[in-house]
Structures are given as C-alpha cells and as structure tokens.
Image 1 (cartoon, rainbow, N blue to C red):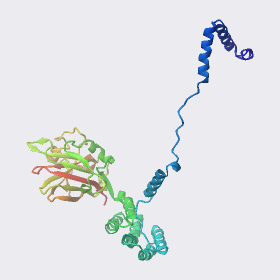
Image 2 (cartoon, one colour):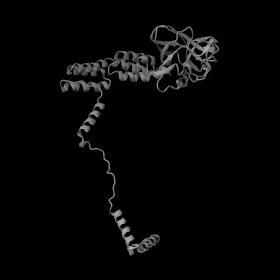
Image 3 (cartoon, helix red, strand yellow):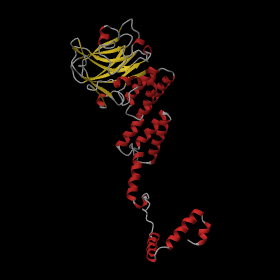
Image 4 (cartoon, rainbow, N blue to C red):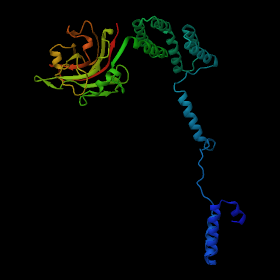
Length: 367
C-alpha cells in the first residue's frame, strides 16, 4: 500500500495498516519471504464456482420436444373426431356444431345429415349420427327450460329425466345435465349423500356412524347418485329387553322447516333375499356418538311413540327405491310437532335377519 493510499484512507485504517507494515518490517528476511509466498499463492489462485445450470434446449433434444408436443396435443383433443371423404362434408359438420351450440336444432340436424353422407368410415358415421339424434330432443329441451323459467319445477324435472333416458348417450347430455342442476335445488334438499365431504345436515351423523358396522363405498354398482354410498351391517347394536337392535344416524333436521317438504326419498341395495324390517325414525335427541340408545330418541322413544316413524320391509335383493309421504305415511304423535324433532335415523327392529345393505341418496322433496 502506497503512502498516498494511507493518507487518503480513514484514520483507523491508516493506523492499523501502518502498524502492520512496521510489524512486517521487524520480521527476519526468512519470515518476510515466507509470508509473501503465502500471500502470492492466495492472490493468484483462480476463483472456482459451479457452472450455472440451464434448462435444456428443446432443439438439442428433438425427440423429447416431439414427445412433449404430442402429449399436449393429445390432452387438447381427447375425444375422437369423425373423418370425412372431402372438405364439403367436414364443413357441413362444423356448421352443424355451430348451429347446435346456438340451439338451432332443425338447421343443425340438416347439416349433420349432409355431413353423415360424406363420412369416411363406420365409426365416423356413428359419431355424426349421434349428433343428428341429439337434435331431435332439442325442442323438448327448450320446453323444459321454459318450464324452469316459469317456476314449473316438477314439470321441468320430469322432462329432464325423460330427456336423459332417451338422449343421455348423445351430445345433448351436457345441456340436459345443466338443466337438472338448475332444477334440482328447487325441488330437493339432500339429507345424506355419503360423499367424501358430507352436506351440512349430514355432518354430525357422519361423525356418529358405527365404525365397526359401516363404511363409505365408491363401488359404482352400489351408487344411485353422486360418487358415494354407505354400507351398513344392520342388526346387532345395543341390547334392550333381551332383544338386539341397530340404529344408523342419517341427518340432523333441527334447523329445517320440515313443513316445506312433502316426501322423503332414499334408495337401499339389499345384498340377499332374506327379509329385513326397518324403521325410518325422526327423534327428539340430537345426533352424537355417545347418545344412549334407550334415551328419548332411542327405542324408548319409539315404544312411547314420542316421535315420527315409518316401518318398511326389504323383501327383494338389489335396489329398492322409496318415496314416503311425510303427511300420509308417517305414524305421528299428535302432541309432537316437527319443530320438536332433531334427528333422522334408520333402525332395525326384530324379528329381522342381520343384513348388509347399502343406502344412498337420502333427500327431502318439495310438493
């Protein structure tokens, strides 16, 4: 460091640097040479660092780039497209798609008919025919949409179910499903869907399910609606008077205005041909995992008729669908009002064979 550098630097730096130079000058020549050699090695050693990583250039690996592009294209075009003998038929098909989207059913059907005559193979002809068939249900769909706008919900729902049965395998299924989604909440209230996330009124019942006797299932053969159902091994349960009962919590109804609804619907899949006697039970107790079976909402409530209930029997294997009239088919105690009832259960009452059943789609229906 030169004298000018020392003069121009800060006072502490000048003092420390000057002291170091004085100390260095006091060393023997051998020590000064050794220190100078060590400093020179440090100063001339090149700085090393890891080379910066860069993303691979697709141009350097054309095979990977080609595969990536093919994957993107396949993701964008998952459904097969019809093939045509010429451009005119293809243009008619594209015109039909546009008219179908605009719900101009007659003109769309005419375009699909012309396109069908120019298809290149049997599969393509089948695909275009499906679009052509879908157009035939368009007018009925429009009438159902008009019924929805006029608040004729039941009429719109019945029409949507009929359309789904006839045109559910055609491209008309998308607007049909949209119609059903709009009509459904106007007519129905789900009590128990048995999906991964329970609906609000099902939440307490889900926590209180008997873990050793019930489980959610995603088996499509055991589901009537949605993506889940509940398997239950009925029978057993807590004893009472030497008999064996079972109780399955379904929903909390304390916050519902039950007078707004006329029917309760549910579906049960019966695994065998042994009869099973069940009771649909509306009780006064709140649903909870530790509620006493013989309490107000348990079997004692049923024996005292301090509840609303309905007995039914499973006699045939397979699906059994129920629609129970809440005003005509329930056994009611005149001293009990709907506002007194807090919970809904499914119960087994002897004599009844122990059974494995699957229950799904428990809902209320408006008049």
